[in-house]
Structure formats: C-alpha cells, structure tokens
Length: 101
Image (tube, rainbow, N blue to C red; front, top):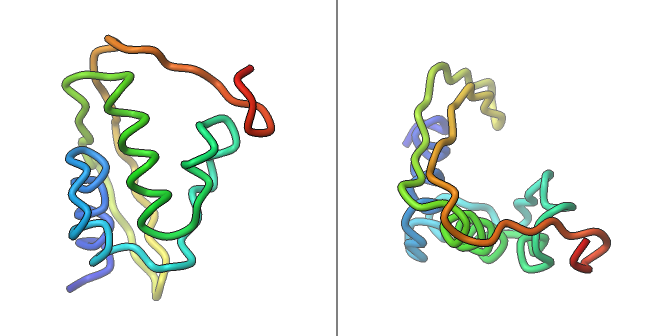
C-alpha cells in the first residue's frame, strides 16, 4: 500500500472511528501535532490519539468529510491539501494545558 493511501485510510478512520483501520494505518509513535488545543485524549500517541481526535471532531460536526485536492509523498512523509467540512451541531471546546479554556 502506497503511503498516500494510508493517509487516505486514516481520514476514513477519523470519519468512522474504525479501530481496525486506525491500527492498520497509524504507527505506534504517531503524534497529532495540532492536539494542543484539543481534548487531552487526542494527545496520546498512535491509533488511540487518532481515534480520540476523530471522536472529538465527529461529536462537534455532523456530516464531517474530507476532500483531498493534492497529495504528495516522499519517503515516509505525505503532504496533502484537503478541505475538511461539516455542520457544527455539537460542542466544540478548546483546551489549554489539558484544561478547558
């Protein structure tokens, strides 16, 4: 499987909460670099952090979807230009140092 396809499958894991898909596509040391303002569970490494991020996003936004515009890969890195969209129908909170801001 091409690394860009793994990233696309990670988008699906974020959208669906599919544990098997998250485990199959996410390294144990994967880190959500944007998790500082997210719930503390999103800061966990590996599939658990990916799944927590997806659960947080799905709770805040119904009809969540990703549209990929461009995807470039070099060795173990992928750069994707995407549009993330959904309808804001649930609470969306910001966290600072693990505390509700």
